[in-house]
Image (cartoon, rainbow, N blue to C red):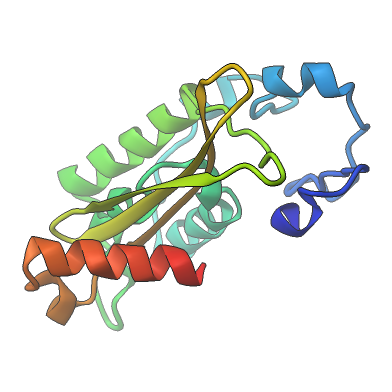
Length: 179
């Protein structure tokens, strides 16, 4: 929905947790916007780790809504994969806790994403890690500064994880182009 509306003159953003439309802001103030909660930056700091598979899936569902704002989200969520397997025992270990803290930290220092500028070329950065792929779509603004527009990431399948780095980068390019 956000991507489709990005080139239109009027833009309304649906609040993911409350489900109501936000009030349109002045275009000159858009660069100052970030994530906000009614109970403040404290809501994130006090967020407790999931204690069950149901809570983990709920947490991942909320992350899916915000995935374009978090760099390498799939890679950060990798430790949770074992907990989501069928018949797996839910055991929150140190790797899961570290991943959870990393995700919380990314919300405390969110990147500022810009809206695309029509008819300006895009810049695509790709990353190929051991177990995930990532991409960043960027664009140079009128002042010559690069602005992040969109983040993409996904976990690698076991067969893909064994590929050479150049093939992983090609896969990241294909993945980004398809999205």
